[in-house]
Length: 356
Image (cartoon, rainbow, N blue to C red; front, side, top):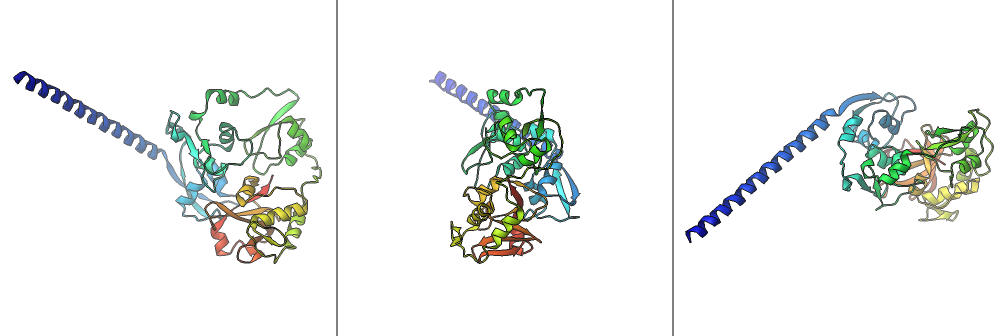
């Protein structure tokens, strides 16, 4: 009996010792994690930036290695509207710090689930990766994403096979060169610069639509020789779009409406642009947002987008007509003109964009 008691006490002592050792290890790991997070935070630096003519939050974020969301949060901004000479506080995170903070093993930290109102550029900015990387990693050819869709947001989660195809591009013949798409570019603009037609560009790059994105690399033939761009039959002039839109003033609001008997905001865009000569499909405001690129200095006929009106994310849109005014189908007054200085629209303004 005495031997049995001694054996039990020995085993109990061994278990107790193991528990103490385990607690020590957990405490040590927690301390290391805390030190790492503090070191990362110390790498972030704060500075001020004075807004210049032509600046947008997106441009400033790109210059300072931060995101639009962080800029707005740091400066308590409720919209994307900024003013020349406005002073913004910018928190810059060094690239080395960003990459050292990534999880090396593929898992939840390397993926993101799309929420309502998300766009590819918004997700790219949030996770500090380029739009081009995001599209390549997820094999996305257009800009369309859907709520609930899971996206890879870190190179660590890219499969070796896909990484290999990204790193080794197809060779370009000597008679060709490469062009990297910049903000404001269209196939028409790039084609005219290299004396090529839009169809030639699309054929050379195996494009199935006119959509291109910033950072995308295109094959071009010939030398850079600016020429007068050819007139595209499917590209309406700004005056045509505005004139068609103005003809519809007073048409009542109708949910999902896209005829002169009644419009909602996106149905109004669909009808006005198709009437002016640009054939576009019927999409929601979010759908049109994904089919357009950002412009810093809007022209009459450009699109103006608003967020967080009756739902989170992009939720309303109109056509810019100049003098800080836009025309849109409002749920409170049908097709009407409004001013961007209006406190409601200033609060919900998101961006100016232009169809591809």
